[in-house]
Length: 192
Image (cartoon, rainbow, N blue to C red; front, side, top):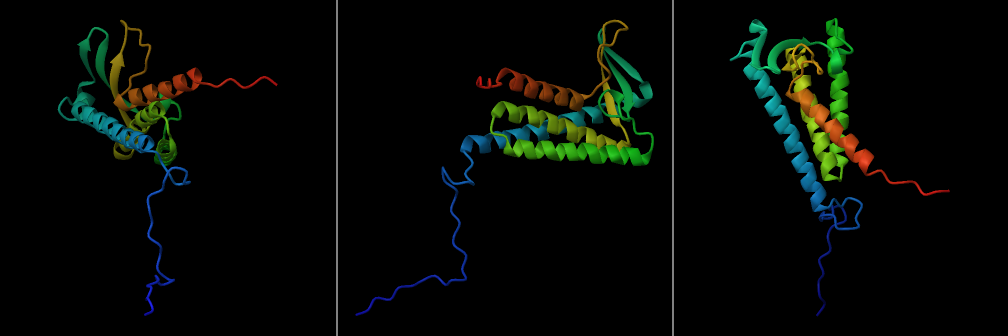
């Protein structure tokens, strides 16, 4: 009696199995977890930034009040930032505004891709802070034509910082984390 064997038709795609250690597509579970935490942190930064701006714009109506003193060294002060970092590249027209939106969106996409590829947890957190902050400021620029800044730290009349927002703080902290980690963990090149 001859045994019949069933062969899979040639046009059927082979079933895909999960990549294993050593496969080029393999991503260790810790890296997948860092990615997930990074994107969640970016989303939380974005939400917190937008919630803080909502409170400043609607319930507090800071744009009409101008300034609210909270402490002797901390005020809420309404500033419409039409530029980027420290007021540079000020958008004086709609074309410049949308150019800034395009430029900052391209940077945010670059950071999102970098976050996807990043293996180190501390770098993922720094990138997540930058990404969440960038997205918060991009949304402002699209909605209002400017970024809403309102946090004003000062010592008397001396203001060591420009007025900023939650997104700006997240971006600054994220960049500092990336720089400190890069500077502290540099590998020395072997002597020639």
